[in-house]
Amino acid sequence: MRREAARRGRGGDDGAQRHHNRIAAALCTLPLLLSGGCFGDDTDAPKTDAAVQLCGNNKLDPGEECEKTWIDDKGVNHEAPIFSFGTCYAGDPECGANCKLVPGSCTAYCGDGKVDGNEACDGAAFAETCAKGPSVCTKDCRLDRTQCIAECGDGVISFPDEQCDGSTFLSGCHDASGTLTCDHCVIVANGCKAFCGDGIKNGPEACDRAAPACHNGSGTVTCAQDCSKLLPGTCTEFCGDGTINGPEECDGATFFAQCHDASGTTVCKDDCTIDKGSCTAYCGDGIKNGPEPCDWPDMPSCHDASGVVGCKHDCTYDPGSCTAFCGDGKRNGPEECDGAATPTCHDSSGTVTCASDCTTGGTCTAYCGDGAKNGPEPCDGADTPRCHNTSGTITCTSSCTVNTGGCNAYCGDGVKNGPEECDGNAKPCAAAICYPDCTVDDSMCP
Image 1 (cartoon, rainbow, N blue to C red):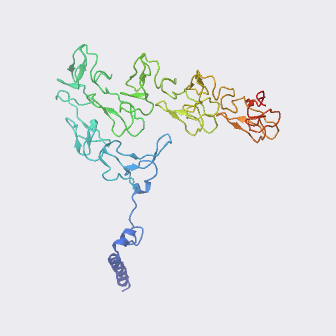
Image 2: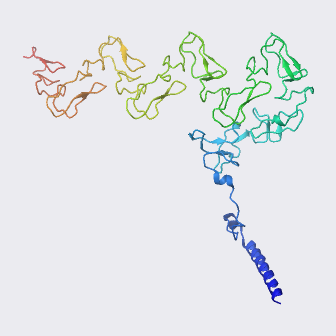
């Protein structure tokens, strides 16, 4: 009887639990379900997506399509989104709050299941396939040729194991120096000095086996088997993309500046460095010339301790946190001029020019900055009036105006004081002449 009661008790407990679950299920409404309030214990509770938990940690994690900001391997923080698919071929991609691509913002990219741009495949869609063996698409939209089965003699080049197959070649000889033949799927040059597969970029090739490194570390660049193009995959910055980035001096036809004179022409080499040829002045030669405000390391110093002036790749200033330097368009520090901030000539004898080092030149003989008080100037450099008392010190500003520094009696204040014979209109008579040093010619006075 006790065993039967115990059995009925256990059965009764199970039945009570099932009854409780049925009631809970009936009472669970949609708002409660969405708020997570319909679960009795941790076992039944919904699990949080790991990708959602990691979203916002400044790095791409499995399950994420993007991060709004990211930190590279060198610890540099990038205030711009990074996407798992690399290049967007159509649209302007946006990163959503859940680290997913905003629907419709990019309509063509690696991972959308369609072959776009330089992709060899995308998911189950293939532009290139293995002649034999399974065609497998990698996550960066390339054909995984390690899965292809090479069979020399089938007339199909199984790259990279075969250079040719029968009469099939990746390309012909780029010059007239010889011909190509195929021997056991290996190219015999027969005097040909340039062809796809020789490992040297030549003729019309965009690459030959080797490919440039990715500057931003987001992928790997490879060379198409026919040497016709670079396959960037998810990489967005590399030598050969036509845009100057990373350590490049140029990229294809893109230069920061062409040759500044008629002495020659600059050429961009395959490694994205400049071949200056006979050109003697260009952006990147390390000498400030032509229209350049700077050319690293030929750049101005900061006049104060607020920062360091840098020079960008296009030979324009990167002032950083510096607030005063030659080239900022304001006359400051030891400068005699700065761009348009150049003094006016007081007479018609010539003009004042401003050199790139912020020094004045030209044919003018009287101007603010020549060190001599002339024209309408109350002072000029060291040619500054002295204070008649000990209440302050007079200095002359870069614009040739007096900074009294607390002084209340000096030549030029318009009041005759101290040893002065006159000061401005403070003179013996209207006909008297008061000179800039506060001496007077009163010979015309009655």
